[in-house]
Amino acid sequence: MSGHDHGLTEHEADAMFEPPSWDERYSGPEKIFSGAPNPQLVAEATGLTPGTALDVGCGEGGDVIWLAGRGWTVTGADFSANGLARAARHAEQAGVADRIDWWHVDARTFAAGGRTYDLVTSHFLHPPNGGMVEVTRRLAEAVARGGHLLVVGHAPSEVFTQLTESRRKAMFLAEELLPALPDGFDVLVAEQRPRTMTRDGVTVDVHDSTLLARRTS
Image (cartoon, rainbow, N blue to C red):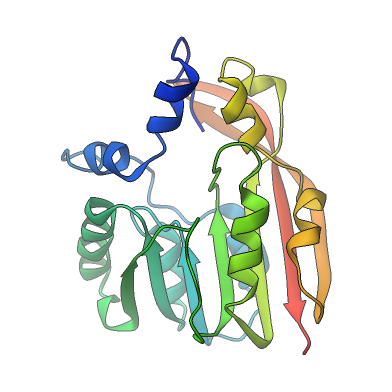
């Protein structure tokens, strides 16, 4: 999330989070993100035995590349074709392209279609107006028995008060995602974890809403 939608109408702000806007953002030569893996992924996946993984909303591929570099066979999914192309280039440069597949799909309409993975993860997807509950339900369907689901996002915070109402409603607490989990999941973590981040050159304190669950049946 950024402050760049300050002063926009709800419609204009929502349009910034649709595929054409992200394709435009990814069309330039500069990196949008640092390329470093998200810290909650590092915290939770470091102790897991590598297997198959799906990262939905993978952007430029930082998390995908990190997982592949640690022995996972990874599918990176995103709704931006330009983002996926950029992620594929980064994977080639990192020497892990042979461990990665790419999937052009929108998280809001994603369907597992019988595919299952040992780890399904998504970081900082924020569909408007509480849409992450439905996305989480879709992601849970892709978790293999014994596998893990890790969903991380921005918790509501005064740091983001300049955003439009629909963007503020897109943020969530981990507990709000629990109704999306079907029977057969054990919740291991459902909490807000403090973190510092730099936005527009300013370091601020935020909280990462972190849901980790394991499929037992």
